[in-house]
Length: 351
Image: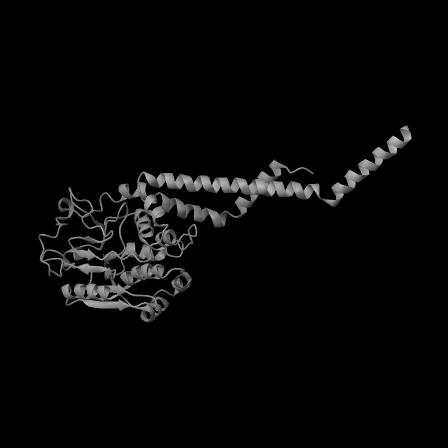
């Protein structure tokens, strides 16, 4: 019995239809993540802090280095709290401890929280019990760090800072905004520094989507982290918000668009970035390329073509295997040998 391409195609379509509850949401998540470069520039155009729109000096030259409040004309929407996170068996490096101390110095009257394995575990279990299984399932420690950023910001509000950021001044002037994060390169924003009011609706969205985006993407560590909890994830959720008026991005100025970007060893008006990024791996090039407006679509096309090619090869292999089984089936052999016996009998009669 020959292998029927029609039956195989029908079987494949039926299998896809029956498994759509699994692959359709996954495809939707991937499309959301992969289309970030195109959607970001449309979504974020009105979210960048500027002098014209907000009467705010993004160079911070107009504000004192020790100004810990938004100023006399503005309400302090972000509470005076600093959050630093140190998870895992390795203690923070000496230069990281010094960086945190410098930030505390510029925010002397603020509360300073240090989140470690013990109090972080208790916090997640008590405040977000429905996400405890997600927290426990993370393969990489940095995923827990990222998830905790969103959880503590939603619960307490304040400022979350990476350990490798040394403050050069107070963050007080930014407290007039409900949510602030610095622009990233080539697209999106960085989660290494975020500040927000308690129970912020956008931060709530970041927390609520953690379970849905908790996937092992292409078995690549860097891609998995960035797509499940990192900057690419957070920036994607930003573009999916119906209202983004209260979400502000700290960008640059006319002649320096990267003024506040925390890429590598850089000095910004707010921080000196020590550029650790110790969790980065060799697949970081893929996600950085995906975020590029021109390279991103090419990467997506390669992934889609690879998926279709793999599916076609799998179908051909299944077809070949099925044809081989058909040819070796006992009933097929009986017909073959019975046919030979009849031919032999006819030849004898003719003789």
